[in-house]
Image 1 (cartoon, rainbow, N blue to C red):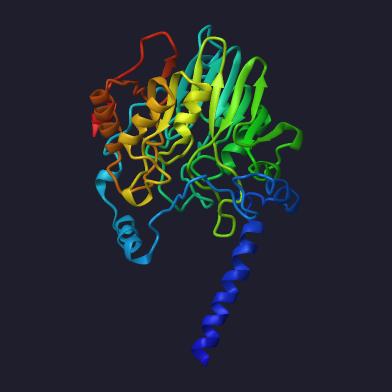
Image 2 (spheres, rainbow, N blue to C red):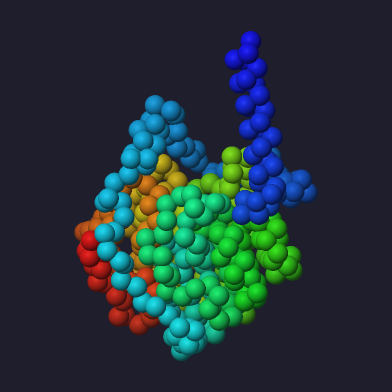
Length: 369
């Protein structure tokens, strides 16, 4: 009886403590309101409680399969982190003066700055040291020094967010940037996090899959991805996740966000392709969760599906969030791209890519260690 009461007490404490912690700690973000859930209920990819991808998307999460994975994470491996400082291009504010031609700067993982048609657009600006609500917990960033600190950025016209996971939407990064940003564009429900963090509601636009919007002449579409969302145990899939298409006068860009391989890529290609440059995730994968994170070989297929010209692999080079070697994504995706005759670019973190100018960086810089 005592044991049973103890277990009940522990469960009760957890159920009470977790919501209280989330209320106290702003990094967990906001919660979707009942009014929003009523609006979402009209959508075909919302089941009344959660958003979902049109075809079954499962992860292997049973205890038998995941315990070995958890043990490998705890045990660690030196090959999951580089053994030398990653080569990085460090930037000053004047380096971000708007160029004559479209360009993109990769900041590691999925963060990127796009300049085109006299606009500066920041995508998934995660600049924190760890993808976690508590910065001292979680895999630390490989190179602690960023190409540029958020406080040093010039004015940003638009920030695009693909979904609300910690490695894409970071509390401290948004706090540091919010006074510099003209407008935030996010998938449905994600605005609740920004509002809790002090972003004015009138500076936030939430979009559904296939919604289109024009940004001072640049056309943006919120497109599907095969993934999930949530910042705690209590809010899985309460907000939408997405990819983005960006069409300017001189360049067409596709940003895939996080996604498993699926038929949405071909549909995006048919509707919005071809693209001059695609930013496609190729890291933090495992066969057990391939439905929500592509394997590098699938990354190349997805690039072809959306009718991309040059492939920029992202979602690697900053954090250890899976069991593969830190440089395995680059090795596998470049090998597959070469096998299939796909043009690929592998810039240094912080290096500028001139889109559509033909001279794309292709150094195998990850071979440093």
